[in-house]
Image 1 (cartoon, rainbow, N blue to C red):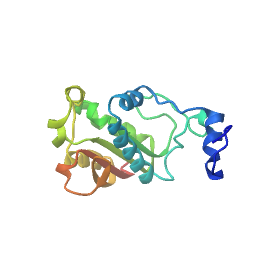
Image 2: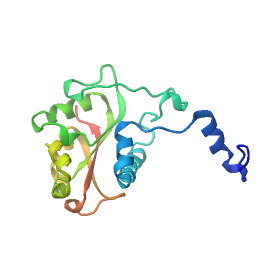
Image 3: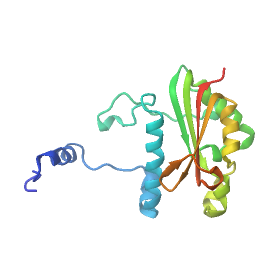
Image 4: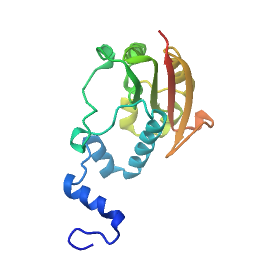
Amino acid sequence: MSEGKTKEAQDQSQIDDYKERGPFTFGPWTSHIWRSNPRHMTFLMACYKFIAKMLQGRDAVPRYAHEGEARARFAVHDVCKGGVANSEFDAAHSLDVIEHVPANVEGLFMRNLTLSLKNQGVCLIGTPNITAEQYASPASKEGHINLKSAATLATLVGEHFHNVFNFSMNDEVVHTGFAPMGHYLFCLGDSVKC
């Protein structure tokens, strides 16, 4: 490469994009993960790849306005305090949240989440498996006050959706295998119960 020109023409867009937009910067949590445990970054990216595949055509465009996409908007909302006002989303996803929600308000959390969805909406919940708790770090154990098994997660999601589909994950592989041996769980709820 000389003076910003690539040897092969098909690679030029990468240089042009870098010159126009600069390097991509991670937020605080992702930066910490990248610096302290880059292997965990591949696990997170695999989780979000699975979400993108499952919610394809339903989810908001996951780019920030400075990345050239103005159709997405971002806001902070405590779903334990209510649904998102005046909204009917096609889909929602919640990764690494339910295990931090106290058991006595998890029903409210799910109810308010579904109130924000259209009747045919879908929701994908992801959480560490309670069977993997023995391998968790002390910091994880401290914050994970409401871990689920595949069965208890499916029961919770099934209280709010007509159709429920369980998946498990080990490392970067999502599967439908024996759930108690999965390190991470996904539960997809489809079609909101009114």
